[in-house]
Image 1 (cartoon, rainbow, N blue to C red):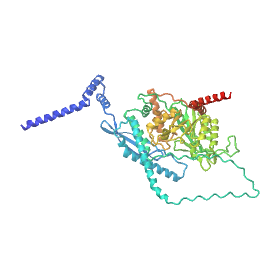
Image 2: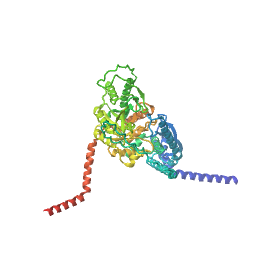
Image 3: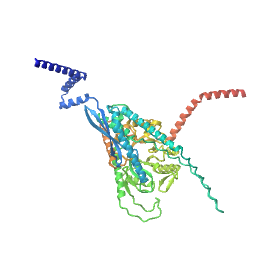
Image 4: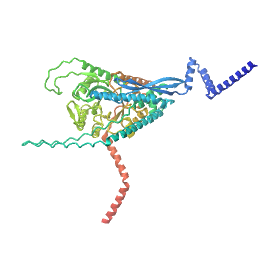
Length: 619
């Protein structure tokens, strides 16, 4: 009896278990899916049956979701600390590491400052990155857990909200510190006024007075740098990591993912490759020669060349530069100044710069340009036809605030107005220069206007360091201060992928040129090439053709070019275009006049009426 009852109970339990299993599979539509899958497999009869079934089941699986986000401290190409973000996802019930992303610090490489300043900047860099790692490890998993990596805009919005809260917390913390310090100063002694300056010494008897020289117009003071909240690079790094995770999981190139976000379409669209800005020489303040004005002498291959052809051509030019530097020097006897204004000859010395190019000791503006002109001639190339030049003047590094002038070469100082004349003469003499980057400080607004009006129709005037941050540009919705042909934007700090898309759209809507630039201390992450192609920027500025962290990005461009050619979605790269600022200003003025007329129509009509009444009265 006992055994029979036990058997009936077991059978009943088994029946209930089967019923639950049936209901579970029915709720998840398993029977119907299996029937359809097996029927389609029979008709297809693939060689690898189980491989085919595995692929089909993968499509039926739930989309992957973010499981955790980990931040790690790594080193960039200069050995400085930076941040790497790794994303883990739940994929088919398993936790997997999908991808990682690295972005570099916004802080530049300092070569011409005192050691204590370098130490101070290094401390600031390390503190900022330490906070970024803390943000990622303590908050990002909770913030993004369960989110599908395909939801880039939602991820970026969550990151933006998180950052806004951090900014508010920092503001409140500083206000509290200030309020606590305030009572300490209430009882302090008021500062004593400084003693009056002594009167000028009386002239000696018979001494002739000097001719009065009109004082030069003082330069505008330097604007305070935009505040950067420590830890902010966590936002940019996580945003990029989410985009890379989506691209990896969907087996889609990152550039295609970025393009689909920008142009709001899933199907592949024709994409153009950016024109390369490749740094060939550095003759800036950190070089050993007297010349300071040319921090970067940049080569731009002709738009008709492929990326590989352009880089190959520039590598050959670079080899010739190295040969000239390595050539044994035979000193020539000093002679009187010849037609080139030099005495004898000097040994050209070069060293590899941190931006991946050769830093050379030149003394005059013409020397590096004549060097490249001569090399191109020997190789059968012509500047202005096969390739063009651009100059990164980095004027903010040349200003001497005690004099209010720029130190163009060692001991030679020019005021902002004289800088305009230098650039006009330079472009007149070397028309193959088609871009000037940061020709004066951002504060010298009047000179930006003058340079653009004088040269804009044949040379792009680019704001690099003079440009505002991406966050500030989006806040102000204006890319015209200072007046320029285009801007260099960088993916640093709290800039998300959505921000990059928005700012490039803003720049394009205001008919300016977008240039994506690399940071000075670069990492080996090659995503910058994908971002440039996906965002559709006109130029990509990666530095020189040396150093592994920069060459990885050029190599990635080669791969992207091949993929676009194979898929038939590569569109020809547009040639260089320029802005006639005088014509633009004239059109703006003409558009402004009708608006004034429409505003004052009522007033004008009443004035005419009053005038006609007065005329009748006079008659």
